[in-house]
Amino acid sequence: MEEMILVVDSGSSFMKAIFNKTLETYVEHSLVAKLLPNSKQKERIWATGDDGLEAWYVAGKKARIQLSDLQEEADIKQDFHGSNRQLIQIMYAMQKLDIPEKINTLVLTIPYSMYFEDDPSLKKLSDRKIYRWKDSFGNDRKVEIDHVIVIPQGTPAQKYFEYKFGNLPNEVISVDVGSSTTDVICLIKDPDTGEYDYRESQCKSFKDKCCINYFVSIIIDKIQNRVHGKLNTDFLSIIDKINRKEFYIQYESTVINFEQEYLKAKEEFTEILSDTLSQDLGKTWISAEKVLLNGGGESFLVDHKWNCKGRTVRLGMFANLVGALLIAQEESSGERVSNDILSKLLDIGSEGNESSKEV
Image 1 (spheres, rainbow, N blue to C red):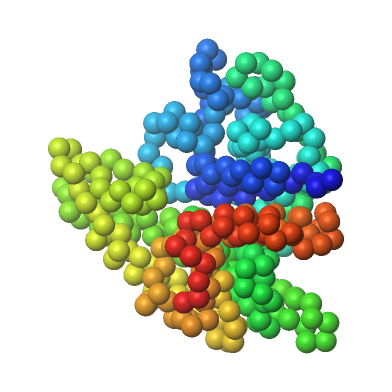
Image 2: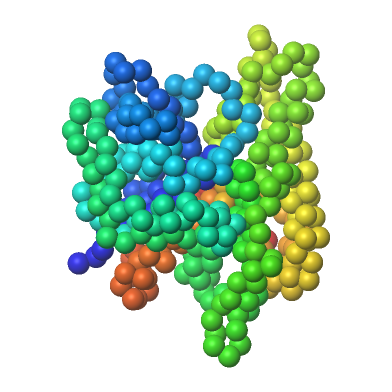
């Protein structure tokens, strides 16, 4: 019998999840909102918040509706992973995906830097084998897990590459462009054993101008320069507009089209990220045979400003999610994933990208 595996990839902007039995995906904003005690929201869950008190909560886009404050940037604080805030999002995803009461494996991702620094959240996430909450009807819900796997963000993209394109080259760099960090993973193949080792000094999380936060701030600043007053928009509003290809916002009685600002921001952001990685990684960046671009910000990079064309492969925003599932399924069965399932997974992995391709 095939094991049941749930993968949850927690990012600063979106939480993504996939259940292997149905191949149904969950993609929602990484947000949680506490509701009023008499709330009638249909998709609410009763759970314990970061304040230690039980209350009704919604997550994702439902939380976005409830939150009135503008969110200037994606911001997952250092204590997010393993917090009740994250647990609420995971349980909310479990309810939306209708996960059964008992599954074999839960796969979770955390930033590379936290994984290799033995952050306390790693143990918190690994040790939790039961998730409990109440649904909107007051029914007790729970999911029990036999085995929890925690994987550093960026590494599953390499497994996705192997399944889609074949074996990895001798030196490969994964660049996971996220909202708050861009995680860079460098792998070197041992010529004697054929195994891959991390070049640890070159595996890093880049912040500041190297993440989607900054990319969106470029767009907002460019739009702001066109008006006299303060724009009533924020990080998530701009991201949502971009994802829907609706390049306009309302400013007082005027509708502003920001497609040109978006295109110019892509060029600026690509140049900054490309130059930063090239300068910081030095010879490793030059010698890498393949650079695997993935994460939500992969689509914001333009080929003509990227300084390692000819050896870069775009994998799409779901490559890490699907790659993590492929890793878990291999571990559970000891075999490669069957071709019929693989074809469906590779299609999911390519979503958010016109096609997984070399540039």
